Length: 506
Image 1 (cartoon, rainbow, N blue to C red):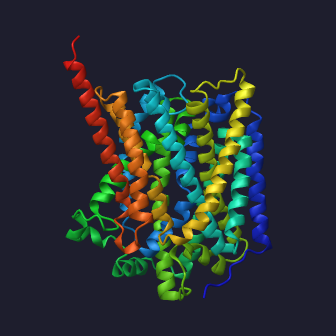
Image 2 (cartoon, one colour; image 1 turned 90 degrees about the vertical axis):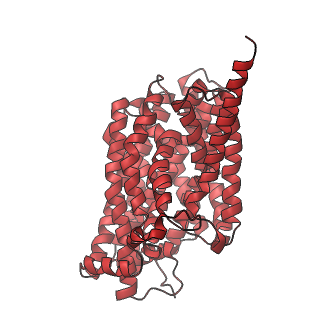
Image 3 (tube, helix red, strand yellow; image 1 turned 180 degrees about the vertical axis):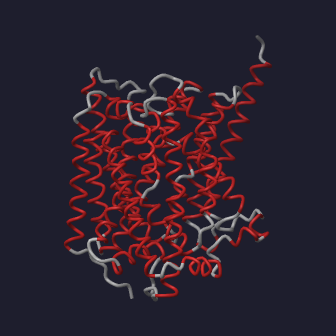
């Protein structure tokens, strides 16, 4: 049976202090808000170190805190190769897109570029796809947090979602982008502290015998042994991972998607002081991410060794709850409180970043683009805060729904989070067609977005969520149909249109 997990008074004091500091940063940041640019873009004056740390905290969510050790515990560390490939390909992605977003004056969203390159339809459809994809991703992060704290402290998942989303929405609404980015810095410190504590404690319990841990992991198929297996290089859609998935999807497509189609990422870079500062911020994030991801995979292997060689794993324990169970049942107070604060930091950083970017896109790409344009900075600032509050409510409601319906889906948090982001590939194709070609047309982009978005939603629903676990294709492949269909539609419609123009009488 699982041991009942609780936090004691000292742990709660640590959490309370963390909440107070976080809220205080939001209030302090609000004093510098005078214009819409101050609220959505932090006045375009963010230091590259702050921007880079914020970018790291944004992408390293509670999904990562829960999913990566769980992935290593249950399946091994093979996916770490994708993280390394992502880092190696990041400079290509940054240089491919960032100059286009910075070369058009003071832009606030990347979807403004699509209207300049194509027309209003591309901008509207792309921003709509972003709003849909990111709001569900934020709800998934809340769902992951609810599972985590149910295991760690016995918190009711519904009340966990209520408390986290309400608190995060409040400090995000008050502090704007500057408040979000500054709290990201503090939250990153908490994440590093949490990792260090867990790693040090696990290391002492296994007697610092890392060689034994690695040997056991390889014996159980949790190392990199599949790299030497010829089957690893075959194109099998039902494999969880293969060479082609890690190379094409994780190493190449993922950084292109993040830096070329995700407003949550680009907004932080556009908040930097200059194009060069934004590039440095992206590289700072990359340098931070690789060793930390490797450490989290290492934690998963340490837990795998600990619960198979030293302590018996609790009966029926899900892999997504292993880390939380270890923290609460093994570490002395106030260390569980510090770890809980670190996990909350990852969760709140993700939610706040999503809410801020959702408010930005809905204000600039939807409302202002279609005629709603307040005459004063005060009115724009007030509207931005109301939009942030509204999106917080929407995230909250979807998270509650996911908490109920998610009980029927037998999969890991890692898989759910990747499936939800399948729309990013559709957006990437259209952005690439604008950046990389002169012949892609507005009709081709609009048609590609419409058809691609439909495929990107239907395929994961039909072939993942509505398919028994044993019959599912590898979850990393689920974004590919949308990408391929979008590319085909953009090319076919554009070529037909260009050809008809050539053949029409002048």
